[in-house]
Structures are given as structure tokens and as C-alpha cells.
Length: 181
Image (cartoon, rainbow, N blue to C red):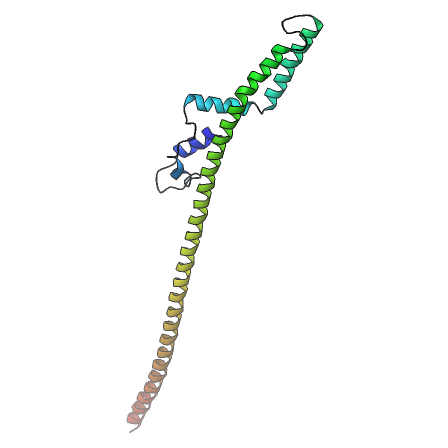
């Protein structure tokens, strides 16, 4: 999972282009607690393997075969009470616990970085929404001013049209009076 998200972040498009992990890019400088070296990555992968059905079924088959082979007498390298098997389980637990803790710590770091990026994304969305709201408000005010000016111009045009009509009627009346005389 980390490799997928790291690859997606590191292969992000150029600045200015929108991409899915753009808000995670600012957290790339954060070094994981146990590093990104070969050992840390393999240890985490191994710790993750402990919780898989494949591991549990495989371990059950091996332990079952171990017990059956030693109790039936096919082999006698670890007879009942299975001291060697107990030693193997103790050794496994001694390595499994720190590896699982390592994996949990690394996952917690990734979760924190993702949460920080998500919070920044929400903040950016809120800022963009506020900016759009201010722009819409300014455009509404401009439109109202334009409507007011248009109404004034319409009133002036009506007044001028009425004046032209009166003047046209006067000119027509004078011309018809002069023609009649």
C-alpha cells in the first residue's frame, strides 16, 4: 500500500496540474520512523504477512504435521511435550512482536500524513468556496448596478422618445400650416 501511494505521489504531474495525491505531496519530506531502506520495507512486509490467511493456514499445517510425525513415531526429533516446537513458537513470537509494532508505527505515520493532507484539502476547499462566494457576491452587485443603469437609460430613452414625438408633431403641424398658407 505504501509503495502504491509513494509511487503515485512521486510520479505526480507537473505543478499546476490536478492529480489525486496533490495534497499529499507536501508530506513527502517526512521520513518514516524506521526509514525506507531495504530492511525496514522487508520487515514491514513480513510483519504484514503474519496476519494473512496464508500464514495462518501454513503454520497450522506445519504444526499439525510436526505433531503427527512426532507422535506416530515416523520421526523422533521432538517427542512429547514438544520442547523444540515451543522453542520455535517462542522464537517466532520474539521476532513477530517487534515487527508487528514496526508495521503499526509505520502505518500510523502514513495515516497521520494522509489525515494532515486531507485536512489541508478540506481547508483549501473551504477557502476556494469562500472565494467563489465573494466573487458571486461581487458579480451580483455588478449585475444589480448594471440593471439599475439600464433602467435609468430606458427611462431616459422613453423621455427622449416622447420629446421627439412631441417635436415631430410640432414640426409636422408647422409644415402643414405653412403649406396651407
